[in-house]
Structure formats: C-alpha cells, structure tokens
Image (tube, rainbow, N blue to C red; front, side):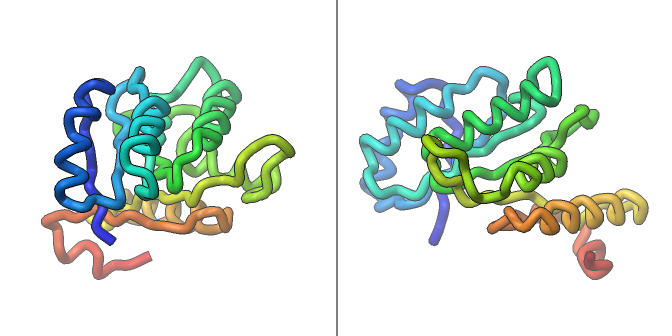
Length: 175
C-alpha cells in the first residue's frame, strides 16, 4: 500500500485535493500534525465522507498538541484516539522534550489497559511510532534506540516509521 501524505492549509484546501486523490485511486492518506490548531478531526471527517474506505493515518505530535500539563495532554491524546482514524502516528516532535513525550504517552496507555477501551469508546486505532537510525553521535543513537525499545515494550506499537537519511553507515549500529 502506498500512502499519500497530505499537507492541507484548510478544510477547503483538502476539498480541492479530493478530485486529485480520486483520479489517482488513492486509498491511504497521512495527515501530519505540523501546527497547534490544525483541524485534523475535521480533515478526517471530510476524507471519510469524500473517500469512503480510505485508510487514514492521523499524526499526533505531542509538541503541537501539548497543553499545560502532562495529564491534560494525555487526555487530549485519548480524545484524539477516539476520532476514528485507522492509524495514529504518535510523535514527540522536535526540539526540547516536554514533560510528556511519545514514550510517556504509550506507557500511560499501556498502564490503563492497553488496547482495551472503556465502554462507550471506540477501539484504539493502530499506533505507529518513529525511529531515526541516523544520529551521528553514538550517545544520541543509543538514546534513540532505548526510546524505540521502550515504545515497543508497551506492546501497543503496530508500525515503526523509519526516517530516511544520508548517514548510511549509522543504521549498521542497530538497536
């Protein structure tokens, strides 16, 4: 399956892209989370309406979705997971780490029962995480590997997204 990554400026912009997606037989779409107030839920509704059956992966960036506290941010994640996407790519986002990151989100999800959801909530979508094997500094690469292991140990991760890079010798270190 080939996924098309859409960068939409607005719901109207997404609606303009629908005929192009249909013309090319697109059946799988990624919607990245690159700013704080992106209407990802509205984008999902548009795709569900205009491209029935499309496999939609919403990206949840802790960096952009972070609220005042880890607890509020985790609650936002729970609401996000309930939107109805087929998949969610959970990323910490670049820059300074917050008090809650993608590892912490997964650990909290696992602690509250993992894939089982309380009554009235949809089942969790498939969860994906990122892994960057191209850190030039060995300490950074080891930290990234430890983060991937921690994510996988939650048993919630169904997909690992690898960053493509130019430091081709770096992945040889492996986790």
